[in-house]
Image 1 (cartoon, rainbow, N blue to C red):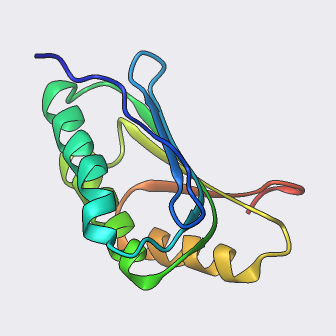
Image 2 (image 1 turned 180 degrees about the horizontal axis):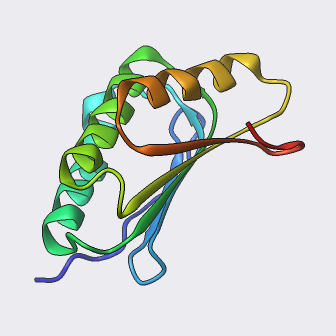
Length: 131
């Protein structure tokens, strides 16, 4: 059975997740502090693993537009990025970390992920362009 697009609706404490395989796009936006991060993020991690297995050479842009995430969400975000890194870090996957220009904490968090994985991660200020 071919991999289908993923759509998880946003709630007060979970982000919206939308994948569009044909467009090569994965977008995660909102706030992430679910009561059970494992339960929330397992469908996304499963999708990511299946994507890299079924489409090993397909380019994918992963956009994060998070206002806030807690430490358990951060662990799952790092796990997801690591899956992409292990597949083919330089050729096929681009990460855009979209942040408010004045949100120093989220800018810092994007920089931390950038230092932890060997992926092309671009920190983009929504008001002022790229950092």
